[in-house]
Amino acid sequence: MTAAAKRYGGSLFELAAEEGLDDRILQELDCAAACMAAEPQYVRLLSMPNIPRARRRALLDEAFGGQMHPYTVSFLKILCDEGLAAQLPACARAYRDCYNRAHGILEVRAAAAVPLDDAARQRLAEKLAAVTGRQIDLTVTVEPELLGGIRLDMDGTRLDGTLRRRLDAIREGLDALTL
Image (tube, rainbow, N blue to C red; front, side, top):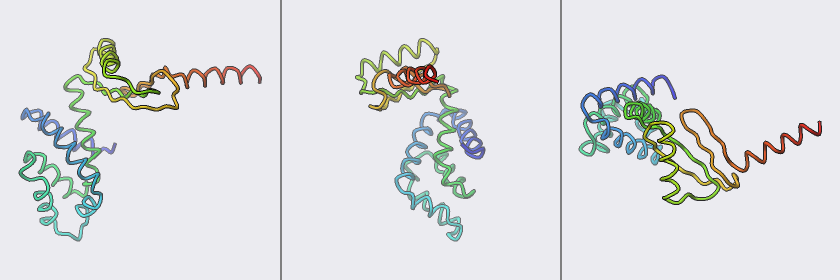
């Protein structure tokens, strides 16, 4: 994430939190980022310096005005004016990081060899909440190559309890013995 994304996303969060709009702006940023990711040509259009600034701003009003809070639309216009429209996903990520810190939320990405049912997801989230003392935002993906177990990525730390990792460790131990 760029320094600009951190600065812009963090500044928007400060404003939104001060106004009690942090939840709404978070949802709107995610929506805007998803819309722009789905239409990369639109981002290129917003980034073209040969299109007058007023026209690019009008395009944002047409797309998002009336549907999103004026702060969100103004933020998109600022990014556009500064030539940072392509940085919206990173700005949204920086905003979410600030939001999570302020609300005591820990994002956890879990990878399992098989899909986890709702009860297993709930138990995992509850255990993680008990261990960390934070609210858990859990995302689970299925990676059959893990063979079994689960791998957790949270706060820059990876906890790998997968069968694949155990087999790799055994293989490395055997390789060390044969040398």
